[in-house]
Length: 270
Length: 278
Ligand SMILES: Nc1ncnc2c1ncn2[C@@H]1O[C@H](COP(=O)(O)OP(=O)(O)OP(=O)(O)O)[C@@H](O)[C@H]1O
Ligand SMILES: [Mg+2]
Image 1: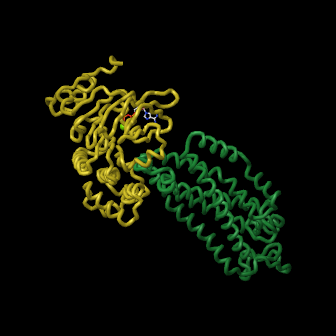
Image 2: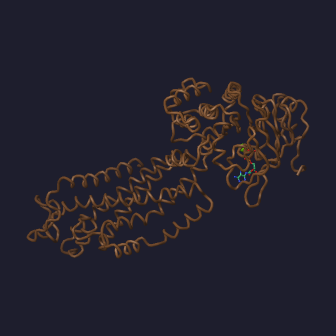
Image 3: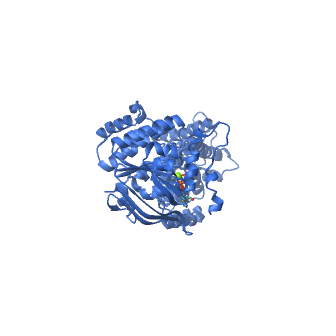
């Protein structure tokens, strides 16, 4: 059962990655080519998933959309991890007032609505996938910092850290050689779950028109376009919806699977 | 010339300044072995950590600890860190948790070497293998390439010994190094410790709650009770003529082989009723 979620998650994630990779070299049609004569066609041999309200091949758009999804996920998770992990490690290792300050700041950041941040950034710098990625990245720093801090305090209280210090290891060595490897599984799980969150957030932002410029094809943008033909052509919303659900489910299952896989060893640590 | 001179060492914890170690003093010469015994909570581990400068920040240390003429109390952590693993080292109680589960054992031992000597990878490995061999791990190559969870408790404890001894420290502090091991393995590890300490001509502070164990390694012993030293002297004298009632209790409980079959085993409380003493 546990392995199932890991493998299913990995398979779904692999599928999304495969879509993105394939779209780099091949799509059935030009995903930005508007063909007014072919609007809202049903799935056929020529257009596997039909065409949308602008006459663009849906399957081609879906493939290209996977690219944006992956890029948004990777960039936002990287922003969150690169800032959140060191912050959490600092907090967990320093303790005392440093810990207190960092944790109160993350509490406040946590309470700040992520959507508001996205709107503010879009208002200031214009709506684009870049501002969306930055907004999502910044908004998920606190959860990264918290998970990292929890793991770090646990590792710091372990006897092997004391033993390492008794051998003369100082704090940079303790961080890099003992804390980081021991919390790596936790960070992996967090990254996977945050990836899912980022995909969902980007889709929501695109849907709200806060992410994508008109030309960049994303799954959220497809949902937005589908809205106007919701009743005449419900399939238009189904395809991007399925793609988003698949990616989100994939990363969440992968995160859960990793957690289950790595938990026994984490327990052995303490 | 003394290696370690402790004077009026006092350790308090937290805002309420609870006293864990109360004004203890002792000396230790080079190559000398000193046992510290006492019941759980008597302040043995706190004393050891104070010597190593490893107490948490909530601890307040006063008094004086001089190691080879250097005052350690009040020294910044970075300065003491230089001495740890080099001039003094420590063997911990729990072999199961004192090794990093994510790191191969050989690398953990090599780390200690590299931290202080700054030698490159190649010769370090050879030295690690040799050290593991000397602490009685005959298949030292395989052990060095193992992760801690692939080793038995006895093997792990030997690895910890190797870590503590690889830089030929002057002082090795052992905090109940054999308590977590079964009796036969315990005897082997103790014999080994005795040999390696002699070979490296290192002094040792050996902590235990078991007088019988201490007597296998040490010549002298301190008895601690509630953070204070209640009795000190050569092990032999403590066995034959214990002065403090608490020590008498400890001696009796360490000689269960002299209890006639069927009779009730003695407890420390038979000799030292704690409630009255307080
Ligand atoms: N970090 C700490 N904060 C507060 N009190 C502490 C701390 N560490 C130890 N103490 C207290 O100091 C006292 C002595 O503890 P210590 O660990 O030295 O006992 P011990 O003699 O090693 O016992 P054992 O045989 O069980 O290991 C105990 O009363 C304990 O509660
Ligand atoms: Mg102890």
